[in-house]
Image 1 (cartoon, rainbow, N blue to C red):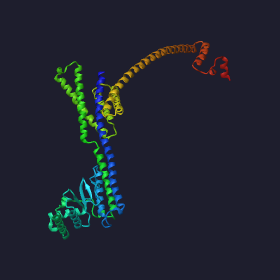
Image 2: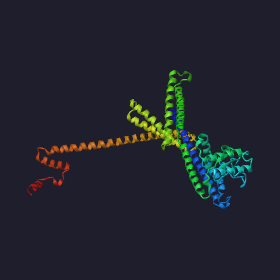
Image 3: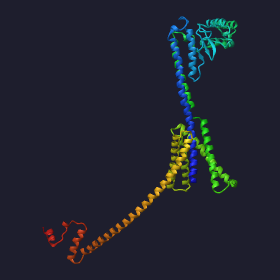
Length: 482
């Protein structure tokens, strides 16, 4: 019973490690599935923003302005829908909205609750002029947290020229110098800062024109789908097993197996009748050595199970069984080399080791299925499986003994029967042999008549066809004369 308890404790600890690693792998898998499911939602919402934009430009009659100025309101919707789509595809919240904004209000849309006015005119000078005019009409607009969005290409050009003026002003051409003057005058008259109060829109001036807006949306849709693929690849990459997690698995497995071995080593010493206070230096040395071996085995187990369960199609329970079987077979191999066991014992012992760990693995898997609680199911399944296995082995042993006993009884009866038949056969052989010997003597008797008759009888006993045997004088005459 003690041996069974020790085996159950050891196998339970081994399968607990396997179940824990399985749980780590399952958490990563669950996170990947959840991330991919969420990414499906993100893609649908991002494309939904672009669908709203398509619906808006699909009816030009509802767009404010004349054919040469309708791009202004188109630019507003591009800014809102593109910006939101780019955030949604990354799993972020929307920042832009038209909610609560009148169509002719001082602001065109809101970004995180702050007012934004969009100005899209043909050329930097014209755009800055419109910004100044808007500020004249709404002088508190910027003070109240408002700002202006202008075409991306125009904003980038302004920044480029300003930086060029700071780094190498002598190479500025006439057009660039005029832009510098325009900017200087704009900042002096409005009190605004190009860097603080103006922002680049998501689109260039040409991209929001009626004739090209559909192509602009198509390009954005392509980029959104590319970003979706990048997000999915990132989710998959993050779900892969890592060195850090592997080291953690090795450490926990080593600590657990080392701890269990330590406790079992102390228990073994206590069974010898020693109290803890009576343990000698040698006793503690033995315990330390065994604990060290357990820790080393645990580390190897944790690493092997983590690698096998993540980089091959091997369940962690089975992987742990592989490791246990490998340790067991290695131990038997050493015993064979030392001459402690025979080759036949080696084979039998290895089979027993593999059967034991197979039962442990199967029981743990079954327990995890029946009790779908991480680690608990595997532990309960292993304990139940081990005890059931032991009961079956005992029952099988009893049944085997009954079968063997019956077999011996049948063999004894058969031997007795064979002995009787053997005696009869031997007696019959002796009788026939004696008769054959007697006939042989008679066949060569000095009395010709006796010899003739005996020869015929001997031929018959030897299996010669009677029609071929000369039994009488008449048979002899007929054979030689005719």
